[in-house]
Length: 180
Image 1 (cartoon, rainbow, N blue to C red):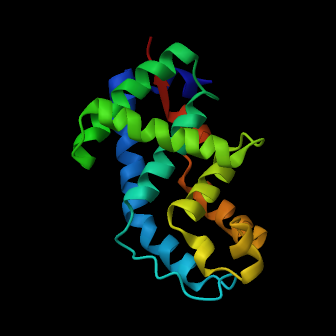
Image 2 (cartoon, rainbow, N blue to C red; image 1 turned 60 degrees about the vertical axis):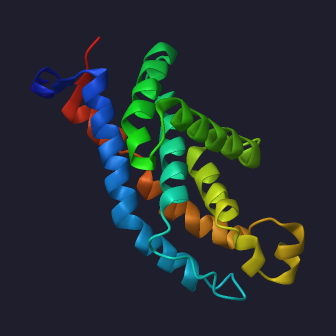
């Protein structure tokens, strides 16, 4: 009962700084492990040699996936405000202007929606985007390489990995509340 009263109140700006910071930290710290898992995955005939420092695309995938999930927790108007703040907060990291950041994340989001159709699960979209953005089809068996689609066993393993990069909303809402 008191937990609801004692939750820390955050403005949209404070939430955005926290949101972007958490995602940047998790992708920076976690991509080395993800690269290792990809490179050692037995669904590839040849080692993809994804470099542990090549996390730029991965960060955009994780950010776009988490931005899609925002719609599950907030109304559309709030998500649009938060998205605008995300573009401003993240743009300097990539050396972009906010409008360029908006275009990059929108392009990633549209790409993820397209390759994931008809599913709407962000985690599945993130796994597939990882596969395509890192050109992993080239390393698969001839059957999957010719089809230019991911081996389902690889995707299943990546789904469990990518799920670790979605913000834990249950824990968030236990500690925080966004102000109006």
